[in-house]
Image 1 (tube, helix red, strand yellow):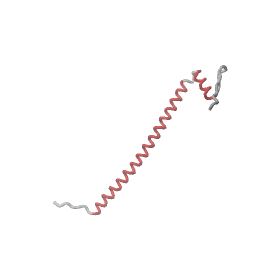
Image 2 (cartoon, rainbow, N blue to C red):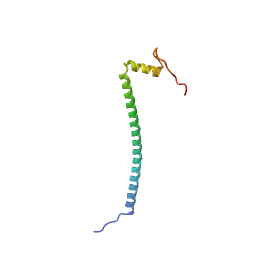
Image 3 (cartoon, rainbow, N blue to C red):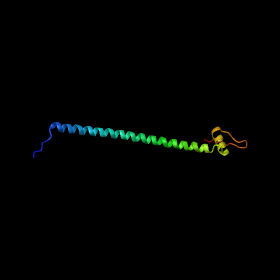
Image 4 (tube, rainbow, N blue to C red):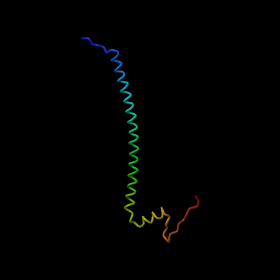
Length: 92
């Protein structure tokens, strides 16, 4: 039985297909890396949003606590109770 050798055209076609396959794989690898970076960025954003939601939920749960409201009034509005004294550090 004789084995017929592949012609130059067949060898060239296989080489071209092999090069095209390698280029496609490298392109897919680049896209995969970009997609992984985007996924990590979005996961970070989701975590930050969940933390913010947790903080807001906590604020809502404490909204009827008089001490909590007084702390907010002091911190954000600079308000004080009539018998309170504020000390300001001017050394900085």
